[in-house]
Amino acid sequence: MTVLRIGARTSQLAVTQAEAVGRQICAAGLYDAFELVGITTRGDTDRRQLSQIGGTGLFTNAVRQALLAGECDLVVHSAKDLPAADSPDFAMFFSAREAPCDVLYGKYPSIAELPAGARVGTGSPRRIGQLLRLRPDVEAVPIRGNVPTRIARAGADLDAVIVARAGLARLGITGGHDIPVAEMVPAPTQGILALETLPGTRAAAAAAQVESAEGRAVALAERSFMVGIEAGCSTPVGALATVASGTDELHLFARWTSPDGTASAEDEATIRLELAAPAAAHADPRELGFRLAAKLLEALGPAAQSVGRETEGK
Image (cartoon, rainbow, N blue to C red; front, side):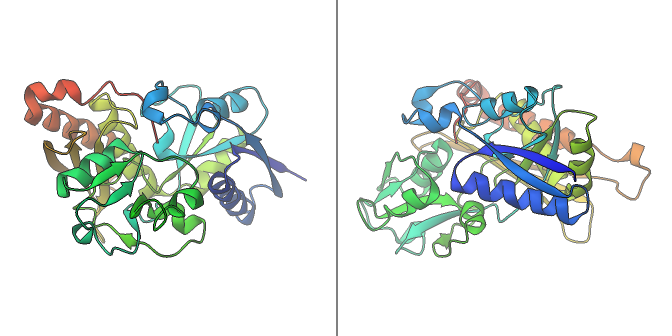
């Protein structure tokens, strides 16, 4: 019997995501069974705000090290937790995307309907900047913790919290109000799972067979955009790539917002993937990301110095 060892963090969400990947691979007949290997990361043990910890790979380095050490065959991450630059040590594959939007969790149906002075919980600089851009009269309260812990504070000591719809959906949690992506652009690769293996292994072949082609295209575009602006996950920037239904057009929109919401810049770009052509002639989604990064940095001018070179958060 062939057993796939899957490494992941030990949070409820991480375990749920890893189990879903294991079931998908086994259902495809690529392995007979799977087992989870729980891994504790620095981001799990250090309870300071992520912007205070600094560094990159807070939720991924230990998981990757377990893979390199041979403790597991494949690891599963929330793609947005990974450093944007690819590593030659790993083969990376991407899931289909869950809903990418953020959610306002609490009794208020929209950001516009929050009362003046409302306390809104989020530890994400991207969410804070876009929240204050829309509503400078509310207070952004830094919070951490797993998804159930955070949403439990809505209606307790906070008026609302902002979380990702994908995390709620994977945990089977309903409620909350979707924030339109035009109001709050999601984090790059939000809602996508990244599967990593060592190159050339049986696990890599299995991951390749269950990978989503569209998930890969949008993830590569969004990750290359982040590389282009030299950003990490705590950079207050959102990016969302979409493939127009029935076409091979890949569209990428991005927005940078200052941490206090008083300044912002946004831009967009589109390429044709040329999927009808031979594989060698297909357009590389990464070209779109790099192109949009250059456009946005040019539009920002001197302010571009404050965009990149950020530390990773979540």
